[in-house]
Image (cartoon, rainbow, N blue to C red; front, side, top):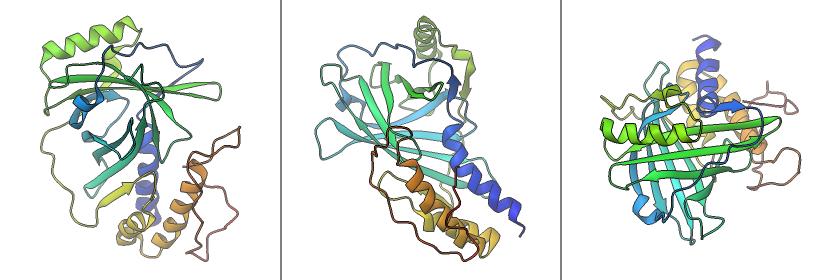
Length: 262
């Protein structure tokens, strides 16, 4: 096949995450975290009913404990709206910087410069939750809202309650995208894209793309490894949240000095 489907798929992998945010001038707004929050009650699977600017479907969050106190793992699973029925599995790490404000957390994803705020605005733990994330970037900020449910639907009573809360923080609830949670099925073997904080599975992406683009998959292995190195470096202050991985040269036609920016 031609190179266009290959480039389209690989671009979708990286753009999928960044498209789930809105960008604004100034610093992140001051959003109040809920009182008396208990993360242990928040653990488990949540269905994302509405989210900022996304075309993903079947999006779920799974919160689990880690081995360290006040550290948690988040797994985001969704379907990518590209030909071929692809599952997208994306892992991140949540921490609680100040244990006296447990609803005001930080989240770090592999495809993200540094960490972002992760604030639970409201939840009853058994029906609904609303989460606000924001990260200060050069010349502004990028933010995202997620409305969650323990089932694949959410009663209007809870939706209205969350919308009212969003309005109090000057957030337009009507700007959120509705997530299709119907007819959600597992993708076929070999059609899964996995991105974690510790391991960027370039081989998985390369394997998928080999089916569409033959040897171009080798080039994608290089791009994926290089992207992991770029995204774990802070911009500006020179610090690093996660160690660099070594770059592998798996394609002779790839310029090792090229700068890959997804």
